Image (tube, rainbow, N blue to C red; front, side, top):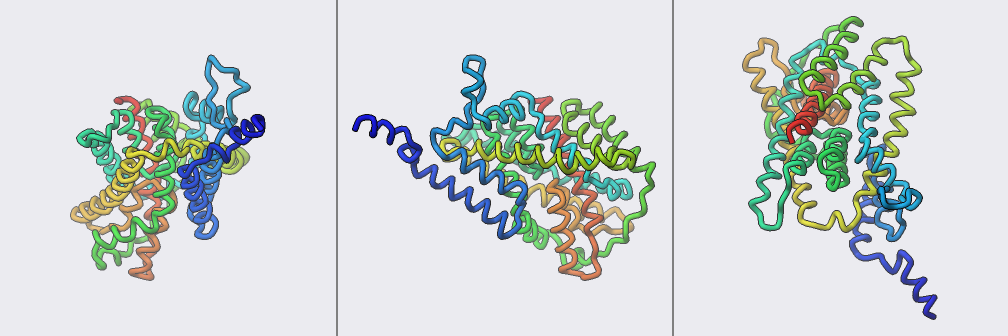
Length: 385
């Protein structure tokens, strides 16, 4: 009987509590939304599966390798987290390599003003950063400077950048900040349209922009090279993300290394996504989630995302005060770097108002600029914090 009781006590059932059950429900919701609503399935499905694994007690899968412990006692996801994120932090740059190989810089090159909209949309990052620091005024909340930076970067709406910065500055918040960033990216279709309608008039949303000019191959080759050199010289700590992003794009634009382009944008990107998303999900164990800090990060992340959207919209309206050829201010909302979801939402909103509107190509300009902008801000935070 003693042995039987010891065995029962060693099972996951005996160590499973209501918090684990709630987290399993969250995981099921993520998987349901990904499958039935097609909401960021490449992110939400592996994250959801990681959450399930993390909340099954006594598995040991998340045990981190340490100098004192036998490496064989480390869990597989603990090893991936330690070497892929915490120690080497190599998975987010690999994601950026694949994204670069899939990115078209044509809309930015044809209309460089779009870089300004991408920069304006980063205002949400700084508002959330200062909001997290101001949380010290509440007796039950306190965020350090590195933690505030990790929370603020959620406003960039860029999952890999959020993961990269959190792993560098606040690894204890990595799972929370990453999942919040991807969750808001997945629900962008519900967050952005009300703000677009609120901050723009119907007349502004009806503005039809002419097709962007044709960009030459020489321009396409020069832009990523010049951008990589200038940005890394100005913000060296952004180099892991910016360098990989531009290298991937140069593979694409050179036209002579199709196998490298295909590998970076397919096999390598898919492998990195699997490892990264599942490992992020495994960081969401019940004991990490159920606290006041998590609720505060949820609120700050939403505020950052909303303020980034509003910053891009309002700056586009300001630009129109000085432009002879007006731009549709809706494209400012695509300055958050949720690629390409934010650009698609902009296009749909434009067509909802005016069927002759085709804003997708124009919106991709600030959208891609937002990716660059959030990576630069991450480098600034790493340099200064």
